[in-house]
Image 1 (cartoon, rainbow, N blue to C red):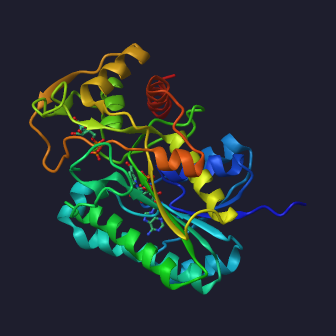
Image 2 (cartoon, protein in one colour):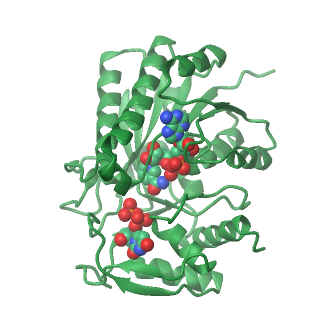
Length: 342
Ligand code: NAD
Ligand code: UDP
């Protein structure tokens, strides 16, 4: 039998990790998902298996538990790792910073150390557009300056980028790519996997879908007096399957040995969308209404950020393809699936 390239997907039971696992399997990779299910459910792994028809391996492990993580390296012969395992609630990171520094830095430092110790090569890290903060010029390119982080969560993204950059520089055996995601939204077209927020959603799209489903009473639009065309904030909403495919492209680049040993790519659509436009598009394509009101600005929000994606388009041969209409249809299909509304 042909020997497939095996990939560790740490945090692979989560929202982005599960979609990436699907795209990896469909692209011909072997996948090992490692997750402690601290912010996810085993049903996501079952969804990955159902979509792909492959019995993808799952290991319940805390990446901060070095001895347990080490055993996983002994047990599986992957040569590449995609690291999603982190906490991501910005507000919680402000009130409980040590929880974020311990988990996000600890899990990543263990990964880098163990990749090196076990002679494994390629590390793909989940970074974020949050590193750009309130940018001076838009769209942001990979050369746009990183701004001082406004939350411990954002700080862990900058610190992990630096850990990867410095490690790749120092240790010849490693190479790394940091993908800076813009705003991932939507779900797999099968509606078998999607975003599963715990408690009250903090992000816009899950709040919209839960309001449309009647679980939340009213969507608050945080601010209509920003210096933007309609007064609401602008973001670059990237479809989750497109985002997942960017990981496959980045992995292939590392495996193929192209490019520099450490690289950074923006992963977005290149198109700014306002909060009002997003809500109205959701209503139009799904034929549902979303109860909403304008509320005060949310502390810490940047006014506008969107990506210059030309580097990823050119170097990774990747671009966002799914339309916003289709992405928002998938978000609603997923919400209905979760609520048993079909
Ligand atoms: P998620 O919470 O759905 O997935 C993260 C997964 O990691 C979860 O399944 C969780 O159980 C697991 N995990 C956390 N700590 C772990 C640990 N110590 N050991 C093992 N597993 C652990 O989040 P997501 O939206 O899929 O995000 C994935 C990554 O992408 C995160 O690093 C996040 O910071 C980053 N990111 C997300 C967004 C976004 O908007 N969703 C944007 C930019 C970057
Ligand atoms: N937003 C909103 N109401 C909500 C959640 C978010 O108006 O209930 C706005 C938020 O102010 C921002 C945009 O939607 O302008 C995207 O917010 P999200 O939290 O999804 O992403 P991020 O702030 O990380 O870009």
